[in-house]
Image (cartoon, rainbow, N blue to C red; front, side, top):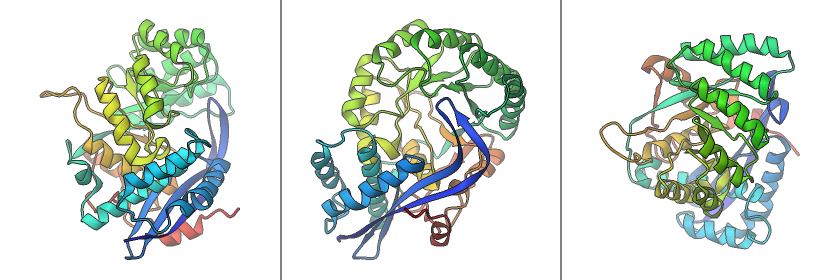
Length: 389
């Protein structure tokens, strides 16, 4: 079998309403789907992390840089291909967009391998440790409104997400330390006591401000404090983890096993959040997962993107060994964006129906059992939402 073509599908549409997080507001959703075709008629699908113009840049890397390196190669040699590409790009990008681009190609190669074997991805990895995964719904996005308006909205939205059946919920923060504490208090009011909620800062704080917010989150019994400070500030993460009671999570902005080795040896995370569509794909994710578990650091995958990313992560969560084990081990969760996402809900020929499953099951979702990643994009949908340029 040989790789005959690699194509990027960059998709976009205008959101019904503008959304925001600590770094920016955005009114357009994008996705970057990678298609790898073979001379035996088997097609694999992957996804690259990276929104907006980043997706357009990654498309150029996929089609103009990576594709010429591997056209004609056997797609079943995915680890050989991974190291070939990484080694040739090492001088030009050990992190960031080249790794995002490689991730989408690698996921597509794993999809091909599953289809060749007639097995879902989790079977290729070694089997399912769980047949259903708890799902947390994130929402409570920032908007151009007063903090008082956001406080009222966050209370109602948190209650609504709980009412949908999700096992937990996550909010955005980033309006400033004192205002963010008010928003966190609003979410706790909305969900009541005893229900998990998490806060995601998208690395907007100084260490001092992160301590201020983190202490309040601890008093509110938040489950984790996500990306409180810049991902480069390893010392700050270690100080926060040592000084706060709330779990410190992060890692979505880190790449490959070497970047993750530094994070884990630093002991700055209670919960690791690797992003498979960015760090190097499934091949590298499995190495990062092994490193996390070697450091006894639990993993909750970062998930952002289309149905391809969601299905891929469901497969990986199914195959994740329990840590540390036992009758009632610590369990991972699937991250689910509750805001409008046509690329997740309408892209597949057969929808995943995450929200329907959550509502019917009391907060969990089943693992796709079709060969490969488990979803097939609708080609008419791809054509309808394609972005030129």
